[in-house]
Every structure is written in structure tokens, then in C-alpha cells.
Image (cartoon, rainbow, N blue to C red):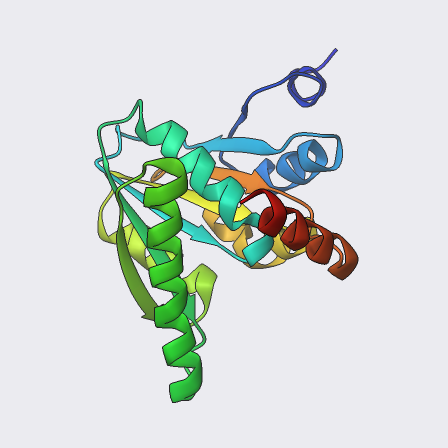
Amino acid sequence: MSAAICAANSAGVSVIAAGAQSTDQLTWLLSHGASEVLVLPTVHVQPKRVLIHWTAEDVRRATLAVAASVLRHVPAEATYLNIVAGNVGNKQRTHGMRELLDARHEAQAVHGLEMRTELHFGEAATELHRQLGDNPEQMLILGVTDRNELKQRFAELLQLSEGSPVLIVFRAAESSAQRKLNKASRQVHG
């Protein structure tokens, strides 16, 4: 049995090497039940800073939970990067700031995670690549809800054999009916 098959059938985080095949391996693992996959470059150092980003609200809570767990074991600074398209108006910029505040509040209240927040403008994959390139002593925790989006937008980040580890947190997007049910449940119980 291959390591990829073993990893997908077990609990915990699957680990794969960064490189030319990493995007295909990652997609396969996520398609076969893995929910967290660490893409580990051949050459890396222990991170002093953990960057956190998610592509959709459906994966925010899971991404923060995984980040809190990682940061209990890795002595690093946590920074959430909210990346908003560069050509947005004031309403979207205000919404971006509100998302920062909500994320920081949830990180502290629900997960006990202290983190800095930063608002950036541009395309998410490009901005994350730039941020990781600024300092090799970083790690990225990236929350996603769509395997195809991951492969199309973030493949370059996952293929770097030198650089920063990337921990993918995958949760399928909720349907609108499921979102309403979960919201009602939180209001009743929370």
C-alpha cells in the first residue's frame, strides 16, 4: 500500500514533499478523505512566523483551530492575512477590515490564539508567494474549500522544493441550507 493511501485512511495530518508532483498528490489525498496535508519542502527551517489565510468563510473556523493547535507546539508569531482584490472600492475595503476584526475575535475567544492581523490587496496566491519569499523562516496555513481552486491558484506555492512549509486545511463548502441549519444551531446553543 502506498504512503499516500495509508495517509488518506488514517487520522491526523498527511505529509508530502514539495515538488513537481505535490499538487497532484495533494488533490488525490483531499479527494480520498484527508482534511489536513502538510507540504514540506526539502530545505526548510523551523518557522518563526506562521501566516494564516483562508479562501472562504466556510473554512475559517477549521483553519483557526488547526493554527491554534500548531502554534501550541511551534514557538512562532501568528499573523492572519486577509487579502482583498486590489481593485475594490471603499465598501469592500471596509468589509475586509471587518473580516480582520471578526477573525481576531474568533481566534482569541474560541481558540485561545493570539495573532496579528494584516490587510493586503491583490491576488491571494501572488501575495502569499511574496510574503513567504520575504522571509524563509515562515510557514503558511492555508484554508480551502475547493480542490480545483487549490490546484489552479496555489500550485506554484506547493511545488517549491526550498522555502516554507504549507499546511492545507480542507473543508468542503457548505450548501446554503446547511449554512442556515448551522447558524440556527449556533444561535440555540451559543
